[in-house]
Length: 178
Image (cartoon, rainbow, N blue to C red):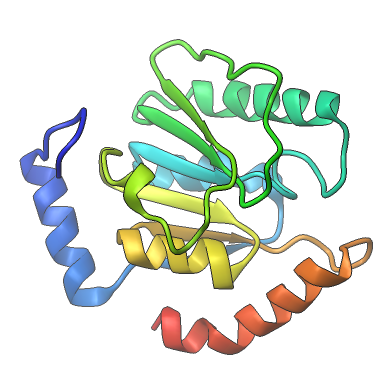
């Protein structure tokens, strides 16, 4: 791995295990469980999908900023996490990218998930992608050999586009995660 962090022996072992078995798929129905799952996985990098985990679709700037601060507070206690990345395919950006003690915080707007993996290649392993769409977040996790924490929010209130993408993602799940 090139970039800011070197591959350690455990990183190389993780990559080899992921090549043999493929990345893990972990469904999560309650967003409150996500920090504990990340801790159990001993992830050093976490990539969060922005909508709806951080802020709901079409929400305000204030809600986006507050959501990022809330997640960083939740993840801040996880000492093994070194990098927290927020990624969205939309153009929305926070007012500022906040700092978190002992963590590098990155925000990627217009991320082109899952096609563009270059911005994630420097992240230390093992890693986790947390998102609500198999067709974007799940495929990104697969391409990076990261565990995918599949957050499944209630369908009620979900816009039509994300709802259709979720349904199509369920169809491809057996092909992406075995």
